[in-house]
Length: 69
Image (cartoon, rainbow, N blue to C red; front, side, top):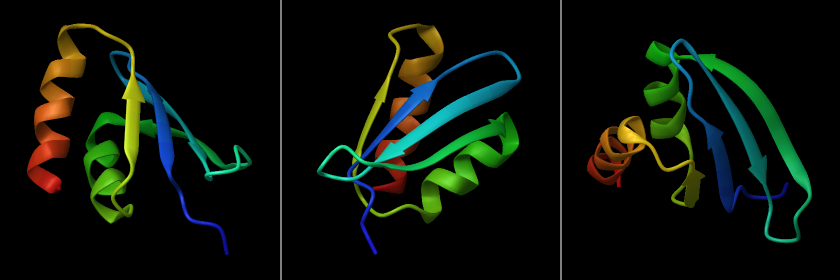
């Protein structure tokens, strides 16, 4: 099974869109998650690159992900 190496995140007010990809670029998942589930989902993922848009909320979520490792 391929491992997630990058997760793309589109931040919104209530629902986040996620796109997970392997090292070769193949899509491993596409998900729509509510805010409360986002942190739990990211905590369950292996260490990888997380790419998200630049906005005020992205700084908060970046700090949360750093805390998770």
